Image 1 (cartoon, each protein chain N blue to C red):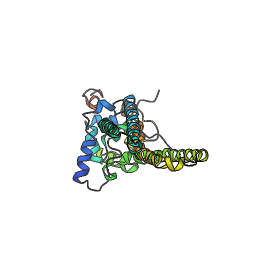
Image 2 (cartoon, chains in turn red, purple; image 1 turned 45 degrees about the horizontal axis):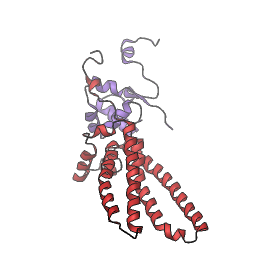
Image 3 (spheres, rainbow over the protein chains, first blue to last red; image 1 turned 90 degrees about the horizontal axis):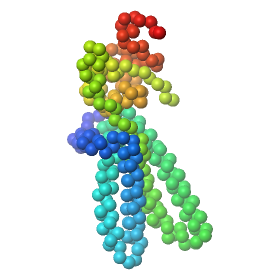
Image 4 (cartoon, rainbow over the protein chains, first blue to last red; image 1 turned 120 degrees about the horizontal axis):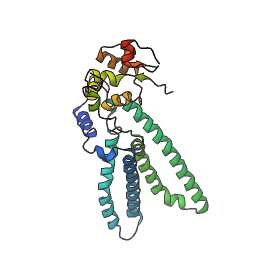
Amino acid sequence: MTTTRLTRYDRSMLRLMNDRRAATWYATAARRRLAVAAHVTLTVAIGGLMTHFFLAEGEPLWSMAVTAVLLLPWMVATGVINGATRGLLELRERALDERQSAERSRVLARSHRVTTLLLAAAAVSLLITGGTAGDAPKAYAAPLLIAVLVVHWVMPLWVAGLRAQDEPADDDDVLEPGVLGR
Amino acid sequence: MSEQVHNRLAVVRAERKVSRQALAEAVGAHYQTIGYIERGQYNPSLDLALKISEFFGLPVEALFSLEPFRPLTDEVYGRNQP
């Protein structure tokens, strides 16, 4: 952590992000991958439903109701990933130590590379569909842009969740008298 | 560039009965960072290495080295490497 003084907000966020009550949810790599997979699935589902809400002509209310229901598990999955990363992306820089700052930079750099590729793929597919159907870019540009924007926003969370490491073993054993032959 | 820096932090910390949390708070790091240093998964900066050494009142080379450490008992009792 830097020598800058932490504000009350920083300290409360630090406590929140380091709360270990839900640690079993992200204790293993498999569980963290599952949380990220659930988050990806829910993000896609919510994005799809919102697109349907804005584009469908008929009865869009059900899609908003389902979106509202899905938002709850989405928030839980977000919390699990934030817990696994100890708030790597949520805490202010001054509340992170040197390892966490370096890890945040790596996560953001990797996310940037992935979303750059995604943007390129989106642009190419829009241009290709524009070549075959003239009005396709106009029709799909807005939803595609929003989809890429959402992915750009949550990609660091997914990358951070996948890169999170197992908690170092509890050090109670190390401190047991006799371990060092004393 | 990921040169492995060896350390005997876990041994010294256990010998002094200092928890990871206490050490982390003293040197301004996260307790996980101390754990990752002990596991060899993170090489501390010179700044952090010096702070840890200062906390234990030891020279930095007593805790961190580019070469693997000999067991403490060998160093204390002068036994040669097999």
